[in-house]
Length: 521
Length: 56
Image (cartoon, rainbow over all chains, first blue to last red; front, side, top):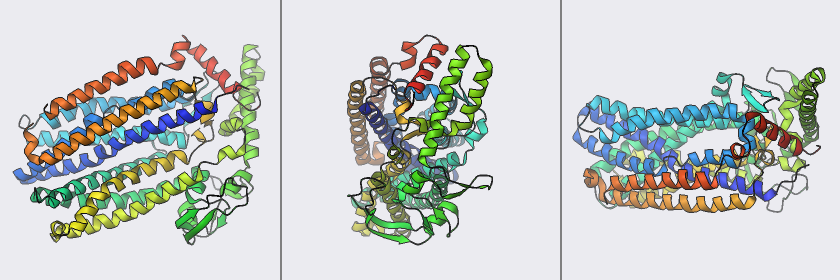
């Protein structure tokens, strides 16, 4: 057995996480603020009111700063695939590459074409054409996000592919199964609507600052009017799509759901944790230590969320490791869940079948190769379990998954209330006289970002150890390179992204302070 | 410096660091630099998958 430096896996994970977290600081603002700017320009187009044009141009400038600083930061993730995750890239490149390639083409042709008209086309093209370009820029950005999220969703729920042992690649069997996977759809809608929230919180926060400074009060009031409604729509849709996402997690990644809820022992009529503190003394799923120091549950809600039925059983970490609980397949056939040991045995059979298939092919023994291929195909859904040394590896980091999930939900609920109150107070013209509300509005912006990042941490930490659910763990996906090289690039990225972030914030703050008067630059 | 120029400068410096410095010196195509043919790459990854398992 090949020995692999464990710190290589951890540094590769850390580097990918760092890059993705920084990249995700720029993306949601592009997606959310883009729609708000488009709505503002639509008001200008419909009313001909020059004030709306001034407002749209002001926010468009901030959109442009974020876009310019953030653009292409995601490409570093693709560099990492080729260098640090070469086994993964080869193993799934045929499937993963397709949506990423479409995203590249979409981003290049649609966004880059229309964003040029959006920024440089004022007074050079007709009002209608300019408006269409603004909308097409944000639609292009949203479609780009769709392809990235389709690729990510496939890793969480691999479907529509066939493994070819000759090329050692998963080949796409159904493009539509990959594109319209239920996980992809719920992930796309949840991610995009949560980005609308970030964009709305951004507009409300800066407008609140203007009101606090008693500047640009008309701009601030009109901006809040749009952002509060759009933010409320975003939060309600994010709650709805979040429920769909949780249902998909329960069905496709039950271990992630168990980690999200700190559920070690499965229950009938399982309750959803409203608030809770995990027991820091608990070190392993089988150590007998209570999972919680304190919690308040909503009875039956976890069963309802996971299975759409209040009375059903939701497996915990222990059940998922030990197996033996009743299940129902996609086709409605009743069965019993396999244990981790049984899955590991199947995974080992699959890897051995791959080895024997290759040996048989080399020896020219086609009949034996056929038998081994059939054995491989039968056990392929458990292929990744052949690399799990200890079944405890199958349990993700429960505290991190649990706390980020609950923080996301709590902030999400606060945001619903926040946008309702903001909309009402703005409508009644109470915002500018209530300093406390203006301060809350400004402090809500970092909360919206934290909420958005928490969602990704839940999605990605909760699925560990899998890079591709059940088929490829991280330890199998990494390239055999030195951990020191990954550590070096981790530090380089941390410096580069921090410089970019500081640049963005300083330029953004400078332009906000200038206000719409600085538009002629 | 005006905003437009500042943003273009950031974009160009960033793209230079990413594509010229990071990509060339720190992020080579791991399989591409080690192997010439697709078959060699497939054999290498296949062997990695077999060697890294718990029961080789």
